[in-house]
Image (cartoon, helix red, strand yellow):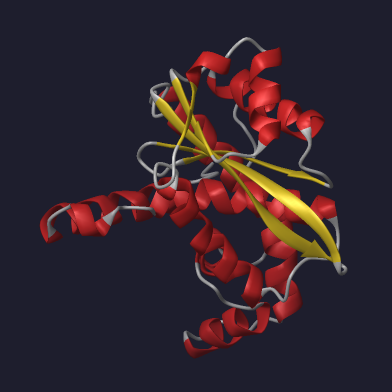
Length: 234
C-alpha cells in the first residue's frame, strides 16, 4: 500500500515547507526572522504559519532522520558522554540531560525537574533502551550518575575526568543559541519536543568542518541537504 504524503492537504509546496522548518530548527532564528527571509525569496507567509509547520512536520522529519540513521548503523556503542544543563521554564529551573557519542552525535535528550538518582536512572534507561549499552560512559562528578550506574550494573564503565567530558560540553552550544533566539521555553513538553527535534537535525547537518578538508566538507554538506529534501517524500 502506498503511503500518503503528509503534504497532501497543503497548498504550499513541500520544498518551501522543508526550507522553513530547516531554517527555524537549524539556525538561531526567530519565527519572524524566517518569515522575513522567505519573503525576500518571494514566499509570502505569516510567522504563525512557520510555527504551525514546525509543530506539524518537525517531529515527522526528526523521526525519519532517526530511522535512516539507525538503519545505517550510525549509532556508536564505544564511548558516550553524558551531561545535564540548566534550562529555565517560566522562571523555574529544569534539567536537560543529553547523551553524545565520541563523534559529537546527540543520541538522547531528556528533560526532568530534578537531577537526582531517579532522574539519572530514567535518562540512562531510555538511552540504553534505544541505543544499547556503551562500553565507556564519560560523566562529570555528579553523584546521581554513579548511583544510577550501580543500580543497572554498569558502574565499572563510568569514567570521570576534568577535561574528558568536553565533547558533550561543546555540543550544548548549538542548543543554547537556539534557546536564546526562542526567548526560552514555557512548558516541559515543548522543551522536550524541541530538544529531540533539534538533536536529530543537528546530527544530520553537523559535519565537523574543522576536522575535514574543504572538498569532503562540501560533499558531506551536499549529501545532507539532499537527504533533507527527500524527507517524507511520497
